[in-house]
Amino acid sequence: MSTPAQESAVTRRLQSVKHIILVLSGKGGVGKSSVTAQLALSLYASSPTARVGVLDVDLTGPSIPRMFGVDDQGVHQSTSGWVPVYADGAGARLACMSVGFLLKKKGDSVVWRGPKKNGMIRQFLSDVRWGDLDYLVIDTPPGTSDEHLSLMEHLAGMHERLSAVIVTTPQAVALMDVMKCLSFTRAVNLPVLGLVENMSGYACPCCGVVHNVFSTGGGEEMAKKEEIGFLGSLPVDTELVSLLDGGPTSQTEFALLEAYKKTPSAKLFENIVTGVVEKLT
Image (cartoon, rainbow, N blue to C red; front, side):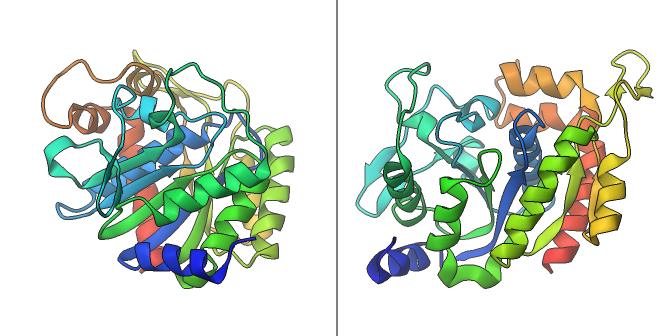
């Protein structure tokens, strides 16, 4: 359990953060982290002044540093706290924090029990120099576990700024787990901005035609049934996969964003971000 002093430290640190968005998924393998990365990049690109933070609390499987092409960098201490890694370099408008920056080797495993995970999340929230942010996007582990409860506990004093985006695939097994995720949001009174159906078909890199390899539409149908917003569908995009796996080849300033804008997913995600921003405002 966090103490009042710890809670106030988190509240003080995040007092200049306007919106905190938790990205949730009922199960692993649905592309939650890639949706987190796209959400952050699209919010960043939505305004020339938008300031975005990305917090990776998937402590045992951190992937945000790799996806943003900054996994060779590390955080350092300053007099005002940990300085996050800025994915946009000198622009300093897209801040990233992950346990991946703190590991001695990229392949080191994180074998922690609940109390240590809780302490790490508290540090991420209270000790990182986030500064003024329009959006803090939090990539969470699959399911509903210690990390989720810790977040809700530490952010209790900022509940009016909290919301969630849920990610699923159209397959029945993923949709079943999404119901548990929805149950969690209702139990903790966490507003849901909407649901994203990821991997909804396959976008051919040659002709751009989307083929329904598995199925499609399951997420949209569930959103209607459960009366939550449906933000949109995203197909499997090989260009996006290559970009987030290997990073951009260009060395220009924030080359990741420029390369991302050219992917088919970026155009589709514009509508998703429009829906998210509308609901937040």
